[in-house]
Length: 113
Length: 113
Image (tube, rainbow over all chains, first blue to last red):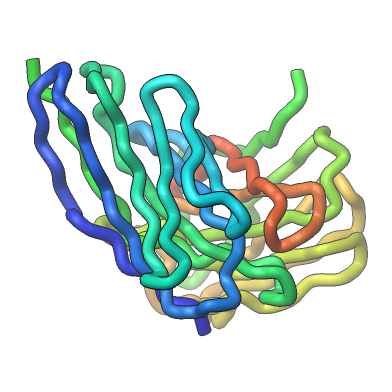
């Protein structure tokens, strides 16, 4: 089955700096890659997603890049703010994979003042 | 308000008792999912349902049971056979396909004493 690895597990940045979280996946058939943000005690919220026919997608301060050849995708947050502090999860799925999203183990991002 | 609701937010049970977690959605989504989240781990899929009266086992279904009698509802029962039931349980729904966005509820934290 699909396996998703996520790095780093923790990340501290200064306010205003950029943060990058990377994920690799094992199944070359994967074609959908969402990123979720989870605040303490709450359910994950989708922040951005990318599909395999696109190499990069941006939404204000957040961007995701996808390298299908290398089977990895990354989340980029620019101009980080304290409210960006949370746990971020990447995930992957593919058509025909039984409606299953496979999640990475999460990255605890801390934005320090 | 449209969305996914889970109740209760916190649940305490004695060892050996079955307990049922509620999940309701008014998004008119066909697919619903149950995940388990433990500290330092990603979300692991317990069960999912793509349509009413049908459901499939996920990666960690042992000790759990579900039903899908109505489109809006997908309750999860944690049975006494589940060896380590204390965890944060998350319900999600999507329009239907593997590459459709999954939207999460707020979660239920179950503690077995």
